[in-house]
Image (cartoon, rainbow, N blue to C red):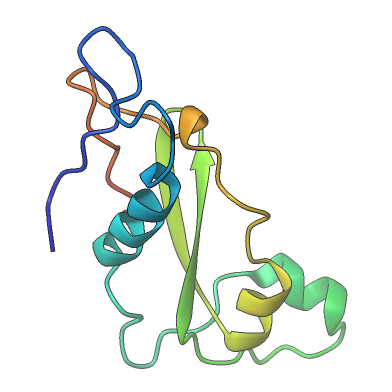
Length: 112
């Protein structure tokens, strides 16, 4: 597992200008940065359960994660299988992924 992924030069230009491998490299790198759900971790997509399964108070165990960009941060939450299937992303635009001043991809943090 690499701890950093260079996306931009110091001038702000994309390192992989043709974008051929950038999206796949970024997806794999982000997935490597997110630890597996801790034992006993419940699904954190509460609003999804309230809408899809109203009246059921018991949340299922999390076995996966979802991540999203929130301003200059990248957050992840732990989710159950159903939520991971329903709320999986529509794809990733590497151009919009936040980077540090040195051009490295921002490491995701747990935002429960």
